Length: 68
Image (cartoon, rainbow, N blue to C red):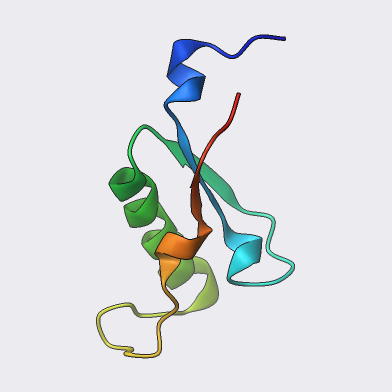
């Protein structure tokens, strides 16, 4: 199956890379958009406060370009 141009330019966040066992994934067209959604997910579902917590994990390590 061939990936569409849109899919080839997508980025994906996989929460399991930061919170082992979490199956949440998010896709977006830019790394920044995906990172923003990831920070929101980590706050809402895992109780992590990005701005208040200097120990907050680097979400960028879990945002990857989707390969078709």
